[in-house]
Image 1 (tube, rainbow, N blue to C red):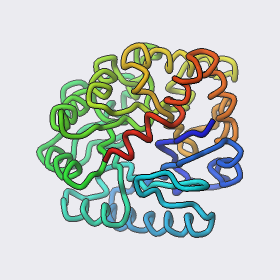
Image 2: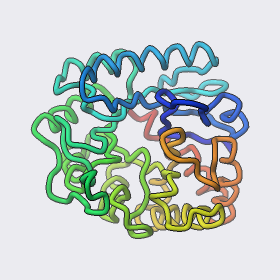
Image 3: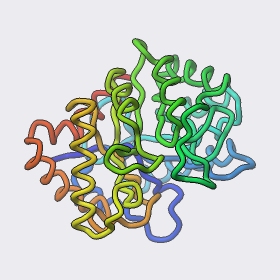
Image 4: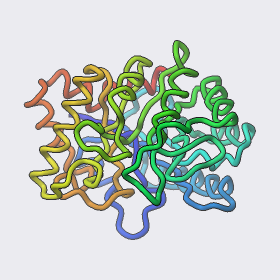
Length: 297
């Protein structure tokens, strides 16, 4: 079964990467999204541009086809940005990134930026941010992203930010949470509330299931992680329906998960999904839901 992965951090991985062509082929990857993750506080736009160049070089070196709205032969790659502060409060810089191929942007990371607020304070990661959402520029940026055909990604965003994005996108464009889980299954602030899952589903978007062990469960054994990820999947499907769930591994941005260590391990998870939910739903989770959203915008 082929799959689409909405998020990885291979472009900024230091040391040995798990997202290699060999592992993607072994896992059956159809499309891998590569995030230009900007953690710097200074020179953020220039850093994003350097990662755009790194993405282009990676695609040429490995023979990945850049995704342009339809499926190609072999492995496709799509460029995203993680941390909307990369545009430095400028709609023109947002447009430049779009012209250079960015098709999805995670609005915030783990700190406040010009667009809005993250889902927790780094000094108290278990305390959810529920009141502060998009700032005025963040609302302008989401409006511009809709006009450009760039997906707004609310992973890392506060509960209020997700609601603000849903209100702006309603009836106009889907939005996504590229790498998140379900807070009802495991109450980490990085996971989505049921209300958030429903809003994404109602807008026609998807939730990419994150494989970070710390967000999934207290049990960090391979068996414990398998049970936890299946529980997150089951809950998201129950709340949002079979068209909302996708894959958002966060490979190379998280410590190695003992159950899913690399893209090469995806077939075992997809088989578990098929046994639990049926082949039709498993294929939706693996690729069809994400492909619907990506081709639609």
